[in-house]
Length: 204
Image 1 (tube, rainbow, N blue to C red):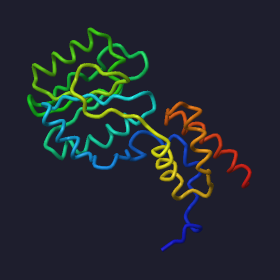
Image 2: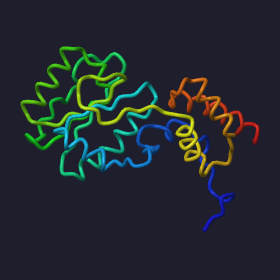
Image 3: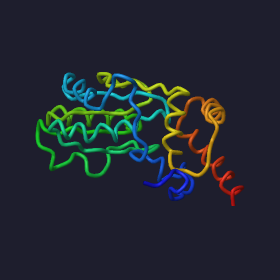
Image 4: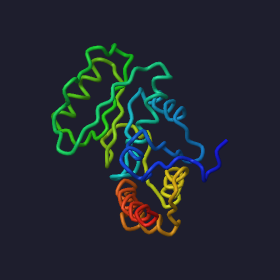
């Protein structure tokens, strides 16, 4: 077994390939699991909202929930919306989704116009599809989870990213970056990328 000092260099552990949604696991609070949230979703008719500020881990939670929903027997159709995307995306509605058997997930739901939201909900109602959305504010669906990152979570994420790295970042530097970005984990990781790049250059 390799000693930590012998582990291969992974470059900057805060680069986009390491921190994209799905690459970093979602760290559940004590007592919460993906399977438990899926049961909560089932009990609310497969409808739910994940609410939290920018950079709070909503996309990471979606990535953790998709396989758990599929393990519960529902096929998932995931749509990731981007800034200013007001219309329903190409490929929606999914023609291969069976009535009453699918869960549609819209990450970035609040980007949609009011008319597009209305169409989406109406289509899901008529096909008896589940609907899970992420948003910065409540949008009228049952709460699945509300996210509020804290410094302890920020440190857990950084520790995980640094687990095989040959550079170190002190806890006080993590907490300072978290505070400077007002709890936005995504922006915090961008700042730590820059710090890590300087450290790696200094190491030569």
